[in-house]
Length: 197
Image (cartoon, rainbow, N blue to C red):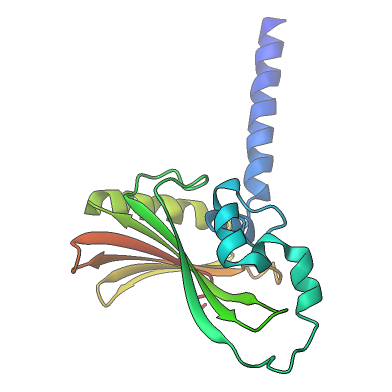
């Protein structure tokens, strides 16, 4: 009886782990890395930042209405970059010194307001070994969930590119770059939501 119970528990844990792994996609993990700012419920640690600097990402219901309204100055905007700096990340469990989520925005007159058109995520490390371990962990996550992948090194940095040809919605092309910052003597990983694949 005890053996049957142990076997059933083992089978259940294996199946549950497999189901979770199958649910992970490039889009899902990319959104998690970006604090789910493009999802209906952003991560709680970034909500105050979104309210102040990118309200269109905080209250997605208002953006659907306001983008359809056309003002007299609808094409004029001011370019802005807003950075959210953090020392802990809810989904990225590797050790890092600081992280920074950069929102590249266009600030239109009201009612359209601030619109985000690009996003970049940085992780900064004091030691090269920490950066390489974190980069390897990211590669291990994205390799099995990608239909196309490419790892290369060029101009002093490592680059991993991943794409999912099975998905046309959301983030289906991402890349990571590991580079040394010679000005600060630190190492950085840059996560971008586009690549050349």
